[in-house]
Amino acid sequence: PFDWYAEMRQDDPVRYDERRQTWDVFRYEEVDRVLRDHETFSSDLTTADIQPPRVGDDDSGFRTMLRADPPDHGRLREFVNERFQPGTIRQNRARIEELTVKQLDQLEDERRIDVVSDLADPLPVSVIAELLGIPTDRREQFKEWSDALVTPDAEDTEQAHETQRQDAWTEMQTYFSELIDERENGGGDDLITLAATARELDREETIGFCILLLIAGNVTTTNLITNAVWCFEEHDVTERVRSGEIDRTQAIEEVLRYRSPVQMVRRVATEDVKLGGRRITAGERVTPWIGSANRDPTMFDAPEAFRPERQPNPHLAFGRGIHYCLGAPLARIEADVALGELLDRFSTIEPDLTDRTPRPTFHGLTALPCAVGR
Ligand code: HEM
Image (tube, rainbow, N blue to C red):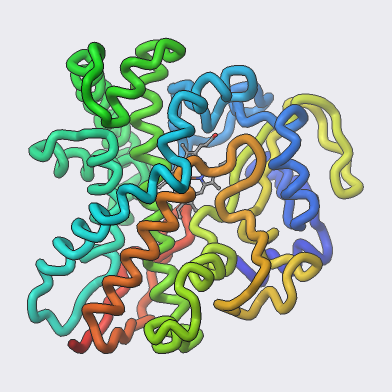
C-alpha cells in the first residue's frame, strides 16, 4: 500500500472513497488532528449515517472503550488503566520470558522454523490468557476464538466465515459470563476479577472488555514480532541488533513506524468540519491511515528508509489521544522479549521472503519460514 499512500499524500490527502463510503485521510497532520479531536471525530461507529461493513477488527455489538466517546470512554477504561502502565506491566517481564522460552523449547533441533506459528502467534495469546486468568485447560479454545474473530480463513467463503464468527461470539459470551460469575466476589488479581468487581461496568460491558482484550492484543502483537524479523532481514540489521550496536527497543519503534500492524482506524464526524481543505459532513465516516501518516516526509526524514536508530520517532502506530493503545507497554515488552530470545537461541536466522502472504485487515504475514542455525 505504501506507493498508494505516497501518491495520495501528494495528490488527494483527504478524499472521499465512493465504494467504501468513507473519507480517507493520509497526511500526518490531519491523521493526528482526527485522532486528537475526539469531539469532532467519534469512535462510536453506530452514529454513522452509513453503517460500515463488518470487518475483523470489530467488537460488534459490545460497548467497549474502543468504540466509546467520553464520558463512557473514561468509565470503560479508567478501572484498568493502572494495570497497563509501563511500570506495572514490567512486572510481567520474567513470566513473558518463561513463556517465550517454553515456546522455543518445543523446536528442539529444527533447522527450519516458522516465526509466526512457532512464536509470534502463540505468545500473545498465552500472555493475555494469563493476564485475564483463563484456566489452562481452556487455552486452546481461547486461541481458536481469537482466530475465528480476526483471521478470515482464506479458503472459506465470506458466508462460512460469518457463521464461524457468530458461533465464536456466542460461545465466548457464555464462557466469559461463567468466569465472571465465579469471580464476582473478588480475591484474584487477574483482569477478569478486576472487571467483574468494577462497580462502573455492567455485565455486558464486562464481557465486552474481556473480548476486546482478546481481539485487540493478539494479531497486532503477532504482526509486530513477525514484521520485526522481516524488517531486520530486509534491511540487513539483524547482526547489529544482536550485537547490541543497535538498540533493540529503538529498532522495534522503527518497525512500528515502518510496518505498522494497524494501518488504519475508523471514526465518524459528529459535525460538519473542514479537513485538509475538504468539507466533511456530520454523520460521514472517516478513515485515518496511520500507516500513511507514519511515512509522511513532512514528519520523518527519508520516511521510506528503515532506520532502526531513528530518533525521535513520533509514529502513530498505537494511535494518539484518549484511545491511545492500552496495551502499548505490553506489546513493546512482548516484542522485545520475543526478539531477544530468538536472537539468543539461534546463531543465524534467515527468513525466506519469496512467498509472502499478507494478513488480511492488518499489516503482517501469515507465515515467515526461516532457516536457523544454533
Ligand atoms: C487501541 C494498536 C497491542 C489493547 C489501539 C489503537 C491502536 C492500537 C492503533 C487505537 C485505536 C483507535 O484509536 O481507534 C496496537 C498495536 C499493537 C497493540 C499496533 C501491537 C503491536 C495491544 C495489546 C492490547 C491492546 C497487547 C491489550 C492487551 C488495546 C485497547 C485499545 C487499543 C484496549 C482501546 C483503547 C481505547 O479505546 O481507549 N491499539 N495495539 N493493544 N489497544 Fe492496542
